Length: 249
Length: 258
Picture 1 (cartoon, helix red, strand yellow):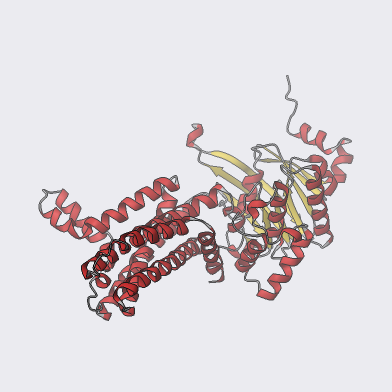
Picture 2 (cartoon, each protein chain N blue to C red; picture 1 turned 180 degrees about the vertical axis):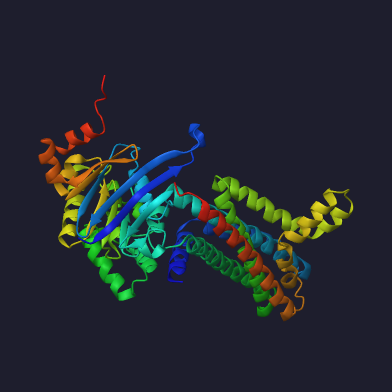
């Protein structure tokens, strides 16, 4: 299977003078591969190194050592981001723009031609069910609608890889279900989805494979069905066991 | 260029949809019209006094718009986290800085066009003539000066923690240079070393924003600025703007995003 995302021996360090330490290791020796068309769940408790890994993949943070590639291109090259869509956790998009204008803006960044832009805007707004509110300024949107406009911007370039950081965070059950449906629909279209979530039930439902990270290190990686069989437990129990919870007395 | 242009358009749209410009424009109009109401006996010197007030208000308003609009750009992108989906697209940090600059400069250009149009109307109704070339030279130099201010405010928005502190510092610097810039060398002469050398260095390093202040040209209907000098002033502004943008890019490319 062709690797859409490949991470080799990744190490990310931050200098953290505020904490009284010289450096803090956020990710330590992470090696990971995500194949084309997979829905990959990236799990771990807060501070496990998930966001740091995503930040490296998105070119926000340079790796201290090791390599990260997307479609075989080093993530430090801006062109590596041409075929990806990214939904960050809790972003407040330009509230003075309408959904249509926001999507036109992002399409302009990708250099999508005008007629194609309009067709893409129609398609993604229908997909995220915001067609009715396309001409309203984003400041009038509810939280769920803002999350869906975020998903729409992540899809505007028809990406082959979607990186979603807590896509259902703060959404009500209906909002979560809608996001889950969208992920499954994208999977059906052959897109690769790499997402982090604390909703383990949701991960179990939509993911083909998962990786569990704890204190910057990979604890396990594999197909969800294989992990469930191997541990004879659900994903939440496996997760808690691997991160050492409850702690030993 | 597509990327830079897309970023710039959003900044222009923001200014159009915010109230800052309209408030300052209405304030300028009201103050100018109030001043115009004291024009007795059609005295020519009173018309000049009116033009002077109107231009001063335009200069102040434009400076406020340029600095406040620019100072909030990058901090707002961070605060609302829109920087993340943006830089997760094929956008370099250089394009980001350039797009923000271009947007602010164009937005301020639009505001200036509105202000100068109003000024032209006011003076045309009083003096029954419209020296277009004089206005164009004055407005262009004014816009160039604001380009330098926008570039250093953009640099400040990366270096300083909050938009308000950056705005205050940039406003004080711009106003200080406009008022005192041309006198720094004379003040330096009266000082002892090493202050004298320091002030002289500042005199030669600081952008002399005051050379772009040619309000007299349209207040007193003086002759046009020589075109070679005009081109030189354009190059001078472009060089300083490029320098500050380069510094902003250097500072921003090293800055962690989170």
